[in-house]
Image (cartoon, rainbow, N blue to C red; front, side, top):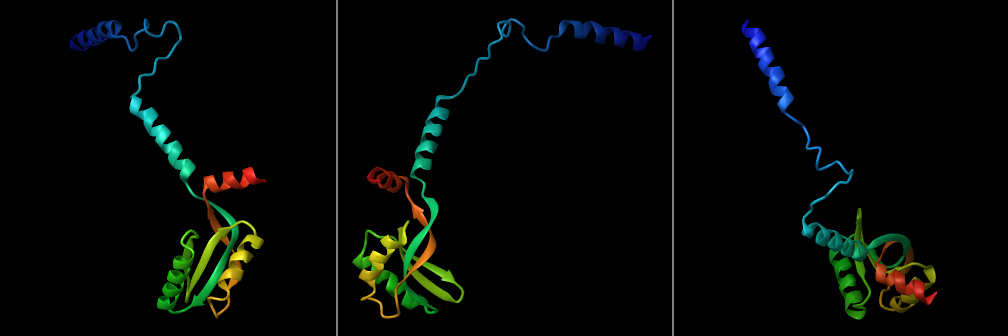
Length: 146
């Protein structure tokens, strides 16, 4: 008897409970409520993505390859003092430290810099293929000039 009473109470209780309010969704539309800061974050992320540096195949000018870190740092400093507007990179490929300069899409562009730097470094200055960093504003200026 006790079980039947509990079962009857459960059945009567479930008829009064509703899972969803049918009046709000009767016309088939969905209303989204969001914080206005989400739009600000999306705009900020788009701006950051446009400023991001893109990696592309290209060429750099290698001014030194040595197993002495101090010599590589000295060569990097010399190039940075003479050409502060050109990016300079020091890469370590065991056991050598390599100082490479510039981000050029074509070998001809890199050759111009190589000719300027060849008188400064006696060990030989070479144009080497590399993965270069190209910023979007530089890409746009190159496309407009073409």
